[in-house]
Length: 139
Image (cartoon, rainbow, N blue to C red):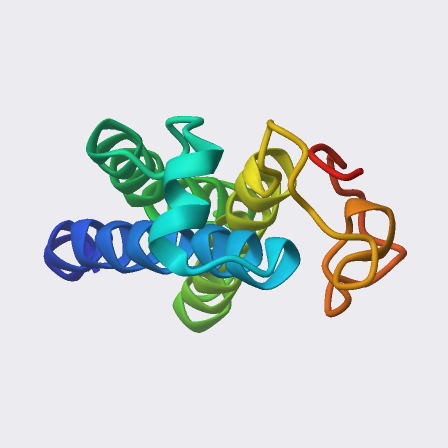
């Protein structure tokens, strides 16, 4: 499990970071009604810069090892199958929570370009109402 974790964690982290950048930019485009290049220039928040991408990749790369270590520790007296199953499930949960938290904090354009007709109240229409979301950038 250790070698696979060392190989897969950076790959998972990079994939989640790229997906998160795409999600944030997609929300900017859909909610502002602007072209991608214009929305990205107007947002100018640093949420999708290269530095943010690298920090996201590092942060997301740490999620699977943390989940696996905690899962193995919680189930240390169980059978190997149970320990590995719980560890992998916990790693997925931690990755999902990190992804949600990152999106919830970084989705908005900070300069007020979300259109109420496209994103009522500054919330993308596909975002579940019961999930918290930092609402910024709506007129």
